[in-house]
Amino acid sequence: MSDSVIYTCDNHIAVITMNKADRMNRLDPEIVDGLNQCWKRFMADDDARVAVLTGSGEKAFSAGADLKNVPHDLYRAIPSIGVPVDKPVIGAVAGWCIGGGMVLTTMCDIIICADNTTFSYPEVKIAFSGGLISNLASRIPHKLAMELLLVGDNMSVQRAYEVGYVNKIVPVAELMPTAMEWAGKIADTAPMPSRMLKRFVLDTMPKGPTEQAAIARVQVEAINDSSDWVEGQAAFAEKRKPNYHGR
Image 1 (cartoon, helix red, strand yellow):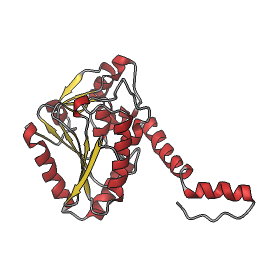
Image 2 (cartoon, helix red, strand yellow):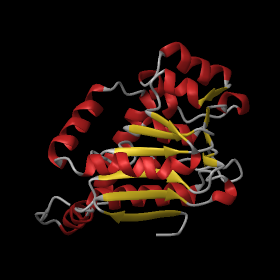
Image 3 (cartoon, one colour):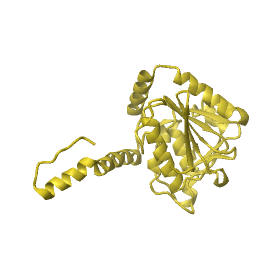
Image 4 (cartoon, one colour):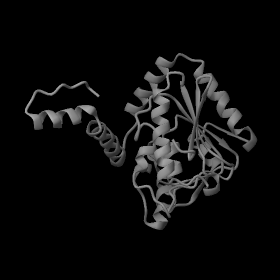
């Protein structure tokens, strides 16, 4: 795993950090791949009960897709879309949260924001969008979601809090301590019901066509990358009964 995204875990809390502050944590193929690996690691980590997702530096959680190196598989970085994630995820957001960065926050269960946070989805202004952001309309009022998506103007952190997108606003210096405090409260609870409740909520929330397509693609790719697929092809070529193991 590269240092573009950092994974640590202590006291049942995983911290996943996009680590390109000099590039405002713009989403490039390295960060997309790093996030994908971190979500898989989080789910495989028996000690991790909750994750805090954040970006390095105070200037930006993420400034969205790196237009000089656009990742055309952004869905792979998104928890519960690119990787099935039924453990709780807290977003710790400071500074700019733009485009794909905002897509990441839509899939966080709780969002703690620094008071310098600004949300924006300006993709219509540059004739670009992957469509995953359509799930925003099930997280905030429809008209406000459409204003963000179609007009492309910014949304202040205070407005995001007022419409229920953000759980708490704190000074920048208190962002990570507050996020870790909330994560600690979750880590102290029984993990089985919290994971069950998240699965039920994920099943309840509407999913747009891009999100559904991405989830389906991930499941198909899992089969195509499996040892069973290799065994099936070999058995067919060798005209013998395959020996499958379900992996």
